[in-house]
Amino acid sequence: MAKLRGIETRKHAAQRMMLIRRENVKRHNEFAARTKLKMDQVHAQRVSQMQMELDRLHGAATRGNGLDNVRINRMNTLRQIIGK
Image (cartoon, rainbow, N blue to C red):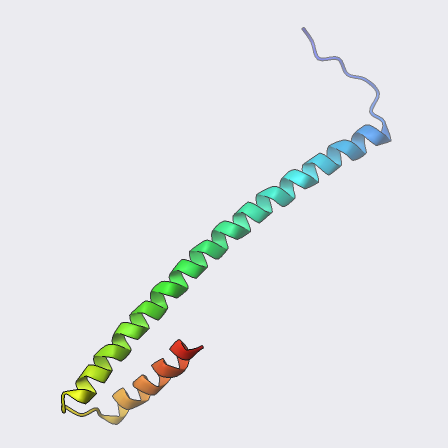
């Protein structure tokens, strides 16, 4: 059976445009949620790696090996970043 085509009214056109807009907004929100989840996972991984590095530096400092200025500065930087 062939599709019947009627006269396109402003009301039908407006309804169709609203449907398209609603679908676009839904698709955008899903994409934004996925992107946010990925960014949150990457951030958590970075913080975890920084925390492990800071723990290693604390361990080196307590073993009596001492830390040079570069490592002390890195330790202070990591403290500031992780504290945020």
